Image (cartoon, rainbow, N blue to C red; front, side, top):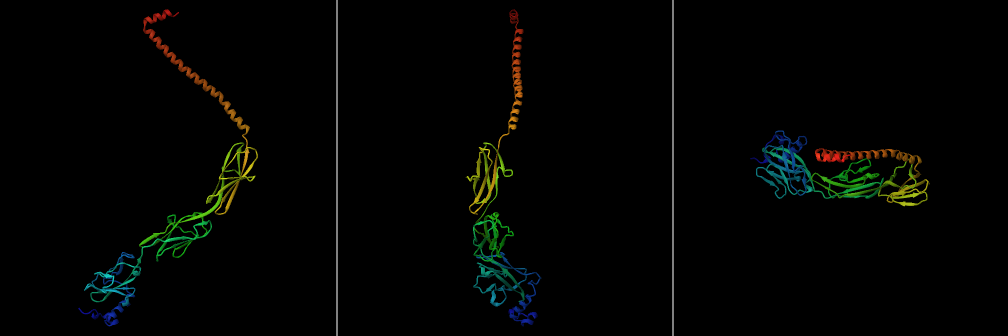
Length: 392
């Protein structure tokens, strides 16, 4: 067989005068406008197996779509310049050059790369020379290499904020080229119009924090081969007090209570942290606690005020209520007595009926006994005679 550089081919002679350098130049020019295909017209491609490289693992760059017999395979990085050549492999001898590298070319031209590093993430080029010594295809393919991710760290500008304050959360990771996902209460965070994210998703800003924003926050770093989630950061939102109410619910700010009858009032307000409640009357007397018992012993109408104070937000809110003392109306007492008196005859009638019914049962029982005794006398003649003598 003639040396590779002496193989005649008119197309290559016109450009490179039949030399190896001319063949490479021609192939590079043709590749700019011809997609890599086999002689049968099948697209040729480089496919990594597995599709993503992981730092420390192995990968094989396979060649798919080329079914012809090849004379040699030449692997490069980025371009087909000699300075970028990784290895050459001859199918005739089964020998690769150089041999003192970690990459290995397999018999079908596949490039095996062990112990991957991030530096192996690159564009790879394979030049396939067919059995005639002609460059049959120049194929390019990207090998992405990723590392297993360390746990990211989340920091917050403040973990204890007031409602309507601004807040900034930052997700830091020692890895590069990762995707950042934010989570709230273990669910993907749904962004709204008051939330802003930087282009790399590493910083989340919440403008005008609301009480509904309180909870657990995490960030998750991910790439195609690995994910890792940060520890939880608890956000506390202080708010209130607001929406104060007094129970039982008054009508027009007034509650009616009977004279000398106790009534328990309860005050409620929305707030975090919990508020301190105080009750005040017109004289300024103070009672602490959310509940307050009133027991009017005079006919004087009184006003009470419930105060709810949040020491964290330095806010307070109050609500007034008026206790109007009333007496039981005479008409109601009389009506109750009429009902009671009206029922008396009915109760007497029921008692008489029960008595009559009881006597009737007793009478029937005695009659039954008498009939039994009369039957016995009739069945015994001696007794019947004796009975007739005794009977006047």
